[in-house]
Length: 317
Image (cartoon, rainbow, N blue to C red; front, side):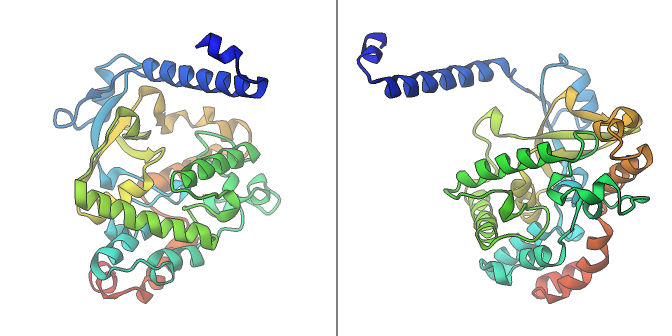
């Protein structure tokens, strides 16, 4: 191998070195991740499951969909009765074969929920027009227990969007929009509808299968007393599909260090930075915990849905 490498031109040797380093790093990382302890069908309480393993050990538990919160700070449970836009889009596809974005509930959602800044997305009281939240873009907002709003969050989201779109052979960035809120570009809209159709067809054809431990939906737990809700790190589309197809639970890969207790609010990054007061951060925590959306969504979304097809109007209004 090394003799062959010496025969290559300098640029090729550099590329080979980069490839081998990346491969070695990936293998090393996979070895570092312990196998999860599978408590599905054994324990329903994720805190009890986490207490039974080494602090570094992940656990796999079934989380009720009603305890899941998706679309970031918007906080939708992935259920039709919660009027989750992706669940409704998938149901429209299942019921009426709606595959065009212009005819989908997704278009209604992205057209009507377009927060102008981080303050409108967070929807917390006592934020004046001179606040940092008003000056930040909506894409710069993260959960206050994870990060302060700013360019680092925006950069992270841009990278995630690029990597996510690349899996489908697309080249997108934050400029094309998020799947949390509008507006979105035509390319982003087409990709989201493509994913709606793909994930529903895949689960209908093959069932819900996870080929490797790294592919399980992984996320965070919000703890409030003895209760909890789960926030997915990824897997938003899969959770919506499970909700649309009538599943009531989803397997979650959970870690002890990814539990945020409401009582720890004073140590949250966006609180210590001064971007959120403790009261504002708790307001956002409690809204998401309760599965409520920002006022801009709550006030208009049920009325907007009247423009959808009969299944939504008759059964879920």
